[in-house]
Image (cartoon, rainbow, N blue to C red; front, side, top):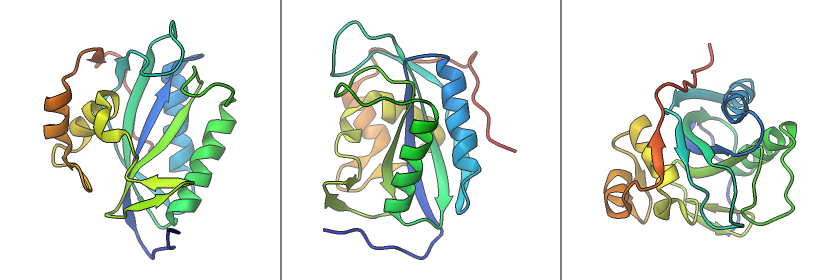
Length: 176
C-alpha cells in the first residue's frame, strides 16, 4: 500500500541511535538537522540511553539511543528521505545489516498511519520489541501508543529494561 501525502501537521516519533564516533554529538547533530528541516518542528527530546547492540554482528560498541517527537507537514516518504539524508550527513554506511553505524534515524510512528509499504512500514515493524526504543519514548511521552500493539509503557514492562541504561549525565537538548 502506498502512503498518501497528508496535510498536517502530523505528529511523528523518530528513534535515533549511534554506536560509532562521538555518539552523543551524532545524536545531537541529528536532532539539530531535523529541527533545521522546513516543515519539521522538534517538540520533545528524550533522555539519552546507553544500550547493548541488538541483532547483527557481535562485539559492537554500545549504542547511544534517544527518541524525538516532531510535528511535521512532510508526508511520511519525505520525512524518510530527510531521515536518510541526515544519516548520510553523518557518514552512515550501510554495509552490514544491523551493523555498527554512526547514525540511525528511524520513523517509529507517523500519526495514526498504518502501512505495510516495503519502503516505509509504519509503525516500525520491530519498535514494539525494542526496549531501546520504548524506554526513551516512554520518558518523552508516557501516554505513547503503537498502533496495533498498544501502550508503549505496557510493552516496555513486558520486555524489561535489561541492557538499557538511562544516562542523565549525557544530555541532549531541544534546539532553540
